[in-house]
Amino acid sequence: MSLAIGQKVLAETSRGQLTIKKKLGEGGQGAVFLVEGHHGPQALKWYAARQATDEQRAAISYLVAMGPPRGPAGRRFIWPEDLVTAAGSDQFGYLMPLIDTNRFADLGEVWARRKPAPGLDILCEISFQTCNSYRVLHLSGHCYRDISQGNLMFDPVGGDVLICDNDNVGVNRQSTFQIWGTWPYMAPELIRGESDHPSTETDLHSLAVLLFHLWVWHHPLHGKMEYEVRCWDDPARRKIYGISPVFIFDPNDERNRLPSDPTYAIASRRWALCPPALQKLLTHAFTVGLREPARRVTEGEWQSLFLQLKDGVLRCPSCRATNLWEPGMSFATCWNEKCRKPITIPARLVFSQLGGAHHVLLTGGAKLLRRHLDPTGPLEQATETIGEVKQNPANPSVWGICNLMSTPWMATAADGKSVEVPPHKSVPLASGLKVNIGGITAQIAT
Image (cartoon, rainbow, N blue to C red; front, side, top):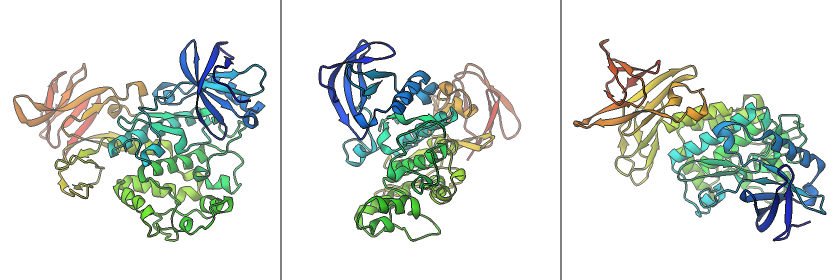
């Protein structure tokens, strides 16, 4: 049964009546409609008859009752809010919030140049938020089972993320399911039939493919082997994605290098833009991770990487291009081919943490956040600004870190002399200076 414009449908839990206003889109599982009810305009996903099974109804009812994961990470999921039925039909659907498609884009729109391409700094934010949300979902004991670029939307200007089509979420290795994933994103062991269920481990492979797509605009397994396929049918996909997957940038296996074809050139250019630490994790994901699911890159590892890269953003003083610095880099050269000028590495504040040192570049206007003190603290407080790099009003050539907390800091110079830094006062940037911020000591390095 197809829904008609003006038709009335019922939200089962709230018992609210909804009116079908127009069709927004259609896919393999069904169609999405704009509906109007007591709570204003919302979206309704209505399942096709073949998808409207008892198992899918039970899955939606479970998700509605459970609700999304808590906190900022959970609010990024466009979660099912209510089961929806229509009189005289065995089909059903679910209610969900509307997405502002003027603000949010999908990757296909960026590739088609209908929406702006995110800068490297915004890509770090998009990647962090994506990994953060999937991490929280997995920690709740659930897996997504269909991670792909089609289910991710992002603000290409600010970096906020929305995760769509959450009706396939289920309890890890337990819930029944109709969807195994999308061919290019499915883990090799699923394609080979060696795993009975999508799981958090197979999600980790899909997440790595999604991140590769975001950064490189290419599939990690689409190289010479894919280029030489004459008929892109299921046997060909099974070979490339499951039977003989080879990473296009595998340092030890050259069978699937990028061919000399202009359509593949952008992958080489964008791979070169990836910082070494990102290249290293992506290489692990598509070498070791292809063969050993238990050793795949975790959401926490991705999350830590993108947080560090966010704190290493450098603007080229000549062309204003966004560059990314990471610990261990003693110099930087602007990636912009029309510029290629050297960039001076500024001083940095180094926090010693259990997972290793975290560096914050002290560029003008750089902010210290609550997460720098407590990386595992509440996400609601993570982005609270506690300090900022500012110029001395009396002497603009002197820069310092301004205390934006309500309690004083203690700064200790290299000669051992200490001074209190009251709220709204600054401590000048000096190599070797140690600053105790809220009980956590960080050191300025150059």
